[in-house]
Image (cartoon, rainbow, N blue to C red):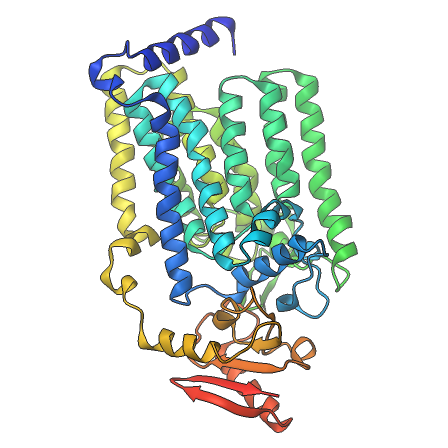
Length: 488
């Protein structure tokens, strides 16, 4: 940032802190707009995710997998995850060693709740730099719209509600990096973005994009080094590290990412572009759900983000998602857009602060952004917090809890997907349909009503596996409301 720009920001911060912006604005301390808003959403995310877990709406895929990995790190072991298969090292699935930072907390509090709380805090932490930037750039009203807009944004809320995922670590890193870019603190932006290489293999593309941004607008050498680090980091992880660690000797998601052909893998429908360059280019903008995703990304900024080059940092992630044959990557579901929301709101703040926008028009844009946030809330998981059924424990869940209580700690269990997430913190858990991994399980528990289809075995397959265990001499311990418990 130029000396003049830095001085203006510093002077505005002084006026904010000392109350020179007016009595109506000085009643709230400056830190409350960022840290206070983040604290509110940390609590909301925690309540939402923990309650979903209590209602058995989480699953072995993915909460159980990440808990097994973090549990291994907490005991200084390689992150082997039996839910993925016998001897499966999760570093051969996705390169996410950064989740080890949660291990010390898990060692003290060995529970899936630890992961859910950690994710809630990490996601809410992204509010801090962007709300504070909005405060210094445009004042309290902008800070509130940006802070609450990001906190309630559909991409972040979807991530908070859907089990645990490593991208929770990326969201605050990106938020701090985006602010640093907007304020032209180039070295800080590079340092905030570099750890993304340890979060997930695709995040090297975001690092490279940050490097390109710096090279074009700041110190070229730093930008080029960062671009190379990001691009080479992703290549090394996808082409060398993941295949070397993976028990299958390859990168399991290569077919999905390249989008070639049509297939069904792990319950995921793929519809690729045929493998050719022309096919890929034709596949990128189609089907229309991809345009819906772009629209949903631009609308929170009242489309003003289009005026900020920071918004272009979304491009690498959107390109590989839209090029993929995995239909889950295209839309607004799951956790895939969480890493884009800090970029979207960073572009919003950047456009508001750099453009010569009259105060009246600025208020209109903020009102439109707030209206979009309010309008989309009923369609995404935060609405569950005010739905009475979410606070009533169904009889089926109570029955499942009672039967799960029959299983002792420290044993090996073959379970159906949702029940697996309830056991990982105290037992060695595999999926009941993975025959090699579950062959020596001491206990088997299956919920015939488990409709979670992402996992590699359906409810029907899991129920069918019960007959195999019974034929091997496993005895019936309990059976009620579709839940069956066997013991060897």
